[in-house]
Length: 225
Ligand SMILES: Cc1cc2nc3c(=O)[nH]c(=O)nc-3n(C[C@H](O)[C@H](O)[C@H](O)COP(=O)(O)O)c2cc1C
Image (cartoon, rainbow, N blue to C red; front, side, top):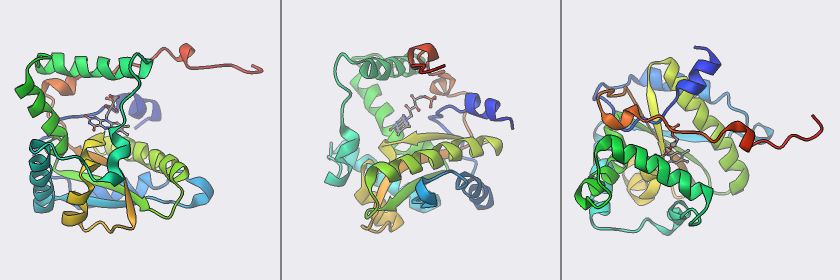
């Protein structure tokens, strides 16, 4: 697959079919993705690949916590940060939410449908597999987060080549205690990202979303060119 096609064809998928993804395919994707660059080739990423009964137990435990309005453990509080009100970041966040809710026919005031929508992320969008990226807690945060970002994008692109789609999701690592318990992730590892992966259900309305991007001229400052 051409790079241009892969980059522009990647999109977040929020409902997958139940078709399982072979272990060999997942391994190939991770092997290719791990060609990502990292500072001084430190390769801080490690992967917990979760499927089957273990993933089902994690989904159920997450949902129980969501329904009980449980706060995540303190180690995950950084993902709860809100974008500043009135900022362009907040506007973009609201915009993608509106697009998804329109497609799903969820009215702003419909608390039941909104709650059901929120739960989907905590169920890994019913994907047959989820990849949890972790890094040693002893590694400095800014550097390891950058390296993990590179491998994360590579996973999404390598998945496309195998006919698979993904959704990177903070929701999937919110309840780190659940993942530590069921996937045996040691306390010494920091949970960095979750990626739901599988074959997309194209009949699901939200999967038709096309997220917008700021015109590139608004993002570039040219210097000396
Ligand atoms: C670090 C990170 C965390 C994300 N967390 C979530 C999440 O918890 N739930 C969700 O539905 N999407 C999540 N997303 C997906 C973004 O909403 C999505 O990438 C963005 O809206 C752009 O859409 P696209 O991926 O289809 O281009 C996350 C993406 C990133 C990079």
